[in-house]
Image (cartoon, rainbow, N blue to C red):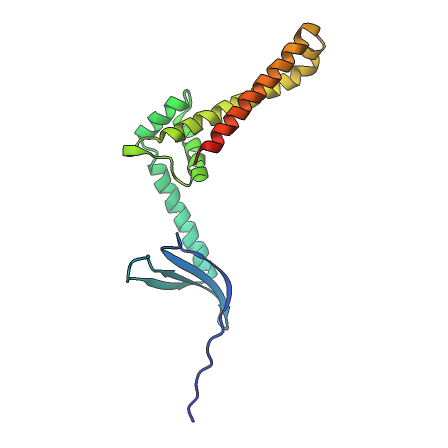
Length: 183
């Protein structure tokens, strides 16, 4: 009598594309050996592929290492040319302050910050400038609101205060619209 092994029962926990759906797939599953993560890399249009398995701890370690390397590579992208270009939009800021803003923008935009020939993308520069102007505007609006009660008690200033509030709100809406146009 021949004994046929029972097929492995794999309960899928979750799945996700590996980098991009055209590149590969990650499938986490649970079977009799415990939870495992299968990674298949099969670029579309290619006959080549790779497959490997990870445990949860392996995945965490890999993610930590990729994050560390990604941070180093991202920081290496902030060349003197990029910093000089950014300084045009962020005058008076230190390199570290500019790098912090570039890092945030890089994350927000999914990396589309560096433009043609290694220069700062103009839209990215405008976005940095809008961000700084929004901060200045918010501080101005806060200052106006802190003194609004005192100023509104002076009849000559009450109407002007309303105009100022309206103008500041209009500028704020303009900046918000500009930020929403960005990638």
